[in-house]
Amino acid sequence: MTEKKGGGDARKGGDRLAEYRGRRDPRKTPEPVPEEEALPHGDDDTFVVQEHHASSLRWDLRFERDGVLVSWAVPKGLPWSPKTNHLAVHTEDHPLEYATFEGDIPQDEYGGGKVTIWDRGTYETEKWSEREVKVVIHGSRVSGRYVLFKTRGENWMIHRMDPPADPDAEPLPEALRPMRPVRKTRLPRDQDAWGFEFAWGGRRLLAYVEGGRTRFTDGRGRPVDGPAGLGSRLGERLGARPAVLDGALAVLDGRETYMIFDVPHLDGRPLLDVPYRERRARLDGLDLSGPAWQTAPWYPGDGDAVRETAAAQGLPGVLAKRLDSPYEPGEESDAWRLIEAPSRKR
Image 1: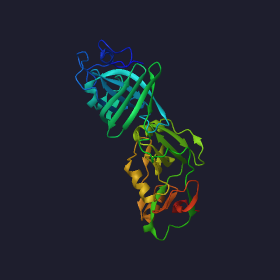
Image 2 (image 1 turned 120 degrees about the horizontal axis):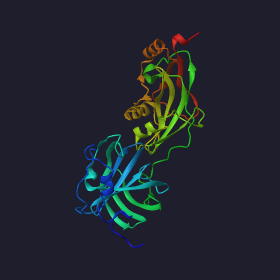
Image 3 (image 1 turned 180 degrees about the vertical axis):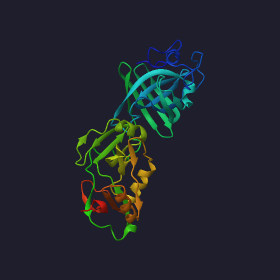
Image 4 (image 1 turned 90 degrees about the vertical axis):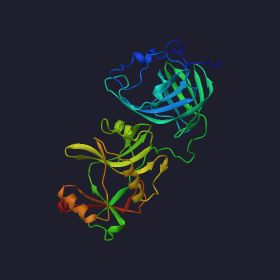
């Protein structure tokens, strides 16, 4: 097909920002809403990816072309490997000023939600037609050759043509059976070698988060539904970072809360052989705290105080975990010990 200039569909030509302006009220939204028609005043080499927390999380991919930013909404983000294609929905052209836009669009406005710049840089065009766009992207977080191809209506697909961006990255496992503690009546003697957590009770859940979406498995590794809204909110919080989270769905202050206490997989890396101390540090670094989930606290070397607090708060007990222990899926390991709180003893 002959290469054509423009946005790649019938919207090219004329006032290419008419649709954009028609959907936005400059008195209500902080987005740039230029008055004039789009005029070429760039080098057709700018790209930007914006993380957009609208009704659902998505990434907006935009390329400068003939005075506008030709745009696609990519619900799962750009693929990192040629093994997977992602949906890309062609949206209205945006003004060039949008390439630097970050801010909160009012919820009652079109596309309401928070917009941040996820990546930006330059690109080179290999092909640009009404049904296919081939580009080489040069960004700080994503680089390489990509092709967008039209499927039906406004739906396109985006495919990575180069080898995986991170050759050593591993996909999330389909399912993990969680590591389980053995029951003990006493705290470990060498408490300095252990970390201590509260035992929350509740239902064990592993969350698999990728591309802003989440699925769950139970204590036996079987697929289950998570609480309403938990999966999408966790997906939004982690954004483009793939992770497996281990936790328990407990009732705290009369409300179900997902208490997260381990991360067996993060950013394309299995952490099964990484010591518990380091896994907890990485989990803490994710800063996962929200209306329906919390990162469970942990206390190195202070088992007696944790057990007394658990008893005072009516919690089932204490989990003692060796600081150097790996994560052993499906195993009942002495490296993790469940000690009942004194008030729970009979």
